[in-house]
Amino acid sequence: MDSTAPLAITMGDPAGIGPEIVVKAFRDQPELTRAAFVAGDLGCMRKAAVAVAAPGTPPIPVALIESPLQVMQVPPGCLPVLQAAAVPTGVRWGEVSASAGRAAGESVQWAARAALAGDVAGLVTAPLHKEALSAAGFEFPGHTELLQYEAARHAGVSPTQMPVRMMLANQELRTVLVSIHMSLRHAIDAVTFEGISQTLDIAEASLQRLLGRSPRLGVAGLNPHAGEGGLFGSEEREVIEPAVAAARARGIDASGPHAPDTVFMRARQGEFDAVIAMYHDQGLIPVKYLGVEQGVNVTLGLPLVRTSPDHGTAFDLAGTGRADASSLIEAIRMARRMLRGA
Ligand SMILES: NC(=O)C1=CN([C@@H]2O[C@H](COP(=O)(O)OP(=O)(O)OC[C@H]3O[C@@H](n4cnc5c(N)ncnc54)[C@H](O)[C@@H]3O)[C@@H](O)[C@H]2O)C=CC1
Ligand SMILES: NCC(=O)COP(=O)(O)O
Image (tube, rainbow, N blue to C red; front, side):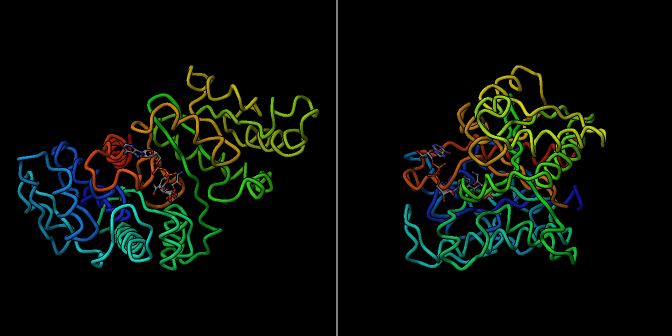
């Protein structure tokens, strides 16, 4: 990974708000988006530039670049786009379609491969629609699994040998998930000694780099009141406690299992640097509830930097120009910070 190379920002699903928030980030944050470019479709980005332009003002100019390094020749105030995928005519705002999913997926694939080859420093991904991605034939539920697959392929190992985890973070709270995109029934089955141990190892290594010290990891229970001494479930005693004890024996500053209904509040008050959440919604609801405009999604465990806003494609807002770009801007900021190693 070359941290001085340009940063790729994928356009997201062209039927969603991704292209519009990307335009807003370039328009409103010229310093932050310097040496960054969009991996996507030129026509789609021009349409988005028109959608977000204030009445009576011209849209920001959108320029085609042929390679990441050409971004350095693009004048300030201009949005550089590398044609990583084509959006066919007929893709309409707010509609799930295989064509849109294909363009979104191909943009991410292009950016991942460019990052792994060292042509870009890292990637920030605008949201894609998971149903559209699936309709396009991608076998990955989301970015995280697609990137895990690409990184494993690059390293010549199987995806299980390249374990990754989703972290959601804002100024007040970080959560790292044991499992990601699966049904709640399957997520309960995924609460295993190995799964928790791997999550603790990945969180420890990634946050050590980010914080410059060993992170304090608060592990949430699965059941109400962390099982209440076995009255409300046995996973805490049988699986989570042993995984926390084993992690402590490896030198990780982990504690728990803590009651899930109060562990996030305790982290926000400063007791933990991150909460290890047992499944997707347990960890994401607290962060998103603090404000969808603040959260950043970071994939931990990859050999590349990848961040993303914490929200989705917001099809209800697509094309209106009203989508808030703050979370994407935070994601770009976070990617820059991670590339600096701070
Ligand atoms: N990083 C990614 O690619 C992510 C993709 N998704 C995907 O997005 C699709 C839609 O997901 P939903 O559950 O509907 O969540 P969503 O985040 O797209 O929308 C939920 C609500 O938040 C609002 N909202 C979201 N982003 C906003 C913004 N920037 N400014 C103002 N309001 C905003 C929407 O208008 C809607 O009312 C799904 O396919 C989901 O899987 C969801 C989260 C992250
Ligand atoms: N809820 C966050 C989410 O689903 C994002 O997934 P990914 O596309 O970052 O894998």
